[in-house]
Image (cartoon, rainbow, N blue to C red; front, side, top):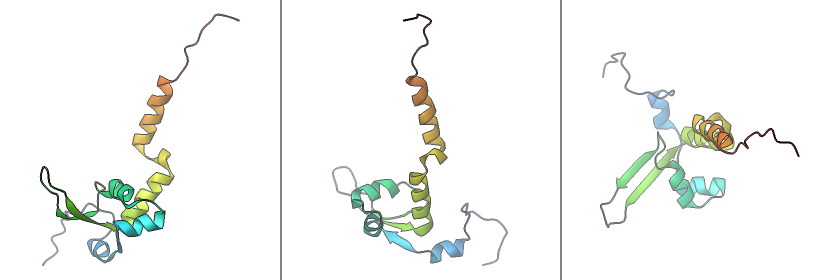
Amino acid sequence: MADSGISLDRSDQPLQARFQERHFAVGEVAELWNLCPDVVRKLFEREPGVLVLGDHGSRGKRRYTTLRIPQSVVERVHRRLCNPDLTTESRKRRVSSSRDHQLPLTTDGP
């Protein structure tokens, strides 16, 4: 296959490096982080870069999916959880929350 110079991959890692990267199972991340596997699944199931394999199920049927989480994604989510101020979403929540809880200024004295 010739290199056309066009890359559909938008990751900051080369394609070959991501294939060779260590991929974790949900249980492995749960054990590393001392969390319940259900919590880890919810954290990673919609995270970009995670491999989701299996049947997503239909209405009324249980879904059977397997997640394989690349090490770079585990590290990215860990950084985000350890530094919530670095994410724009948490910054927006913090600003709007502080505006909602400000007390009105009054000029009445005691």
